[in-house]
Image (cartoon, rainbow, N blue to C red):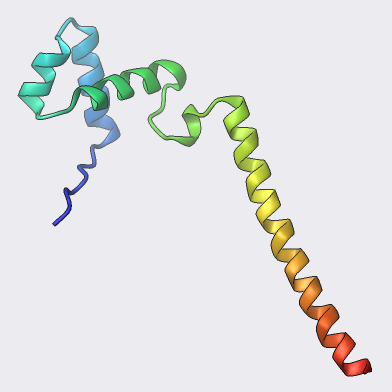
Length: 95
């Protein structure tokens, strides 16, 4: 069976950041709250950068633009496929 991913509330993450800013060490927080060093460091970095914990809020401008362009590209490919299918159907009717 795979390892389940723990989900933490925004309130809990803010509490951990507050403790870290108050001088508690990362290793203390890891032991006391059963957290990973990566989780703590990620939360601190995200909250420092944007004041939020979501992935989208913490993307760089280039990453945001790339995400938009990929979504637009996917939409255009889908529309192109629909047009190709319509052309095939209309071509069969006229033949």
